[in-house]
Image 1 (cartoon, helix red, strand yellow):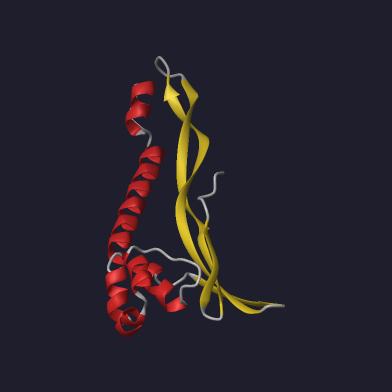
Image 2 (image 1 turned 90 degrees about the vertical axis):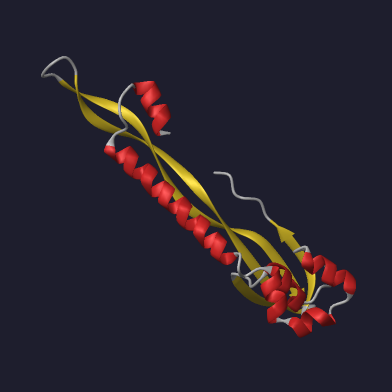
Length: 165
């Protein structure tokens, strides 16, 4: 973005824009490190954590778990090994009985563009206001997946797309 700004305006990027870009780079770097750290909570580590449960799973379910996949009829323990702990657990009940919903969240960066102004010298002592475009990036959470359990087994599940704003 700095390159584009320089290319179009022929000037060095203003401090506000540089600060926004630095914040974005730091955020991306920290998220990358966080994701790399979260990689230690992998399927392999969860299989080790719940060895007895994993060994008791039928071979076809074990194969799905190894691939990080789930299906209707799978136990909540198998889903935990395949996908990890949910971000949120909701409990409900209807005519058919109690149900538990596990929610997993994702994060995306929402861009907000806005105009800013700066004083620019035009031919000597004349100062004029020049308008330029800035962008901020803010993390936004959304429900990435939901799994409904009835009697400890998956009765339905769905993944959801990232919102488009």
